[in-house]
Length: 139
Ligand code: CMP
View 1: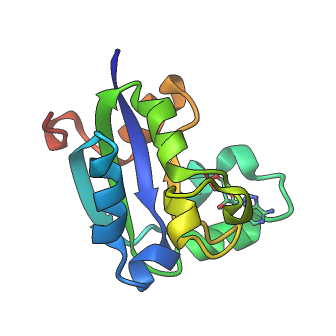
View 2: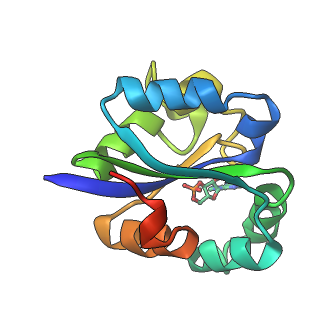
């Protein structure tokens, strides 16, 4: 089934000028970038986005990191896009990520791991709606 998922190219990757390289891995995997914008996330946006992790010990560090430089937010479309993009990203911890995945190629640590991707179709819809209006997504 054709799905849409939400992606963020994180500050560690934008800082190293890796947006194009990350996008090449995404497109080579057959996912289409149907919306994309570079933004400076506000503290409020980051806290809302990662609300589910608010009790975790790394929450403060995570919000600090996500607001430390611009990010690129994206909507990706394709067959089974949610699970496909999770495969393309690789494991959260780059030390455990498979060869050829974005995190194996580019991520620096479990915290500074270059990309985010939605973990379910339901969350993908909520996350997309947090950053994009319908008319910004052109499939
Ligand atoms: P992401 O997929 O964006 O969702 C939650 C994020 O929390 C995760 O990627 C990591 O960047 C971050 N994270 C997870 N575990 C840790 C950790 N142990 N220390 C710091 N950050 C973490």
